[in-house]
Length: 337
Length: 77
Image: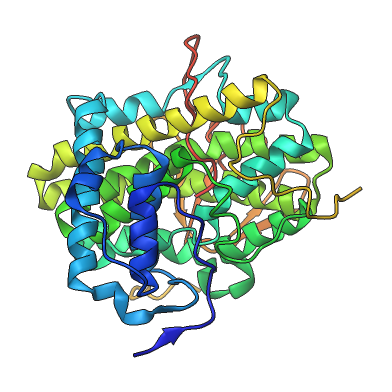
């Protein structure tokens, strides 16, 4: 058996389900009982962390956990039960548009006076809030575009070519110094954060975990390829204007050149990506498989639903001057002057 | 000298609303004579003239509404 001695440290459990999954990964106990999985709130810390632990085995794994746990049939059975809870909740709670065009049209309109997270950070965000934002988002951006690569073998023709082209751009177009995850690590350095993969898993909120679990769920299941494509479109379409506001926030607070560059790059890159994803990836997929239209719409709307919950949490805390993180992370770093 | 007929013409995608989409890499000569370059596999050129990153599209062509939206997704992907 191959043990991953190197790799992210396993996080602290957040309840009985995540505790049992963690123990199982360490050969220290049985998997959670079905009743415990059934009793855990679908979007709560415990279930979301347990699912995150299962998914992370497909990316970088954890220190001290055998690499072949990725395909442990008992663990996969538990993962399926967790996924069922999460997906059922999303299907029940997400307001889904009737058509893909309707879902896209709503994303393609910019509110004249938006009051989302990027608006807040642009207008009044302080450095500590930008640090918190980067800390939370690091769970995704340090593996940016990785979850979406799973969908490539499930696509053909125009959709595959378009998706691969966008992913190539995400991965730096052949240049390691331009890989978006690498650019994000440079942003974290500007903000005085630790760029180690998985370092801030304990600090991230359940609502943040849910946004990453959504990508892994859609990416790892061929049956959900339509939802993955919809999810990706939603992210790319909303990214460009939001990135412009965050680039302004970084400039106003003097966060640093790499912090500005990360978002400046995304203003330009994602203005292209959203065109390719809409015309080539969604257009190509639905020309081949028109029956996936409702899944594409679900992917778009489920993303908006979970992003909306996360935004409410961030803004709710920040407007009261409270931290959005589960564990304090800034006391241990040296503040940049 | 005319281009070789075997050489495929560069295709540009035009839309009523939205940027021109050109296969990259692209070099653009600006009014002041300077040139800017993009190495991206595809390049979106601003046609609405509202872009703050002109000549590159920054999605400023999008329609704006008075309605407020609290949820904005993850910028940057």
